[in-house]
Image 1 (cartoon, rainbow, N blue to C red):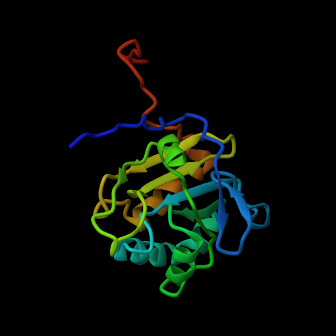
Image 2: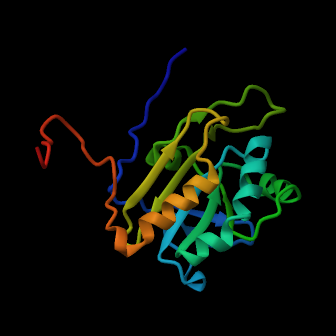
Length: 191
């Protein structure tokens, strides 16, 4: 079995310019909050697709935190590699008010650095799909929080994530982007 590894996005890096189409036919740019929300950050949730019951449950649970995230200035967008028809069918099992987009291409999944899986059968789905990824993009367009998984069983616990984002967004905490050390040339700032 051959494996292909795509580079992972780094904390602090500029989020790539990627677009997708929402279930209501609107083109959206991932990582760019919708103006009507008043938010200046966006959480981009990459999910596997309609075939994944864990994704359905996670997206429905995320809806429970939508207002709390809005209060701290974080918009939500979910996206998958599903087709328009697959998303339309999936919407019948979703009870969410945040936008859901479809049509991530292989090139876009590679740009995001998410793990990509092949379908096990035609009954699962008919295309390669992204494993879960969660990216929180700040007002400067940089990645503030990055979480990727190679399977559907590992995802951020939503209450802990929202609590953490509330802490990060509080200007009194002066909380920087974490995990930005990239190589051995980085030195300890204090001793």
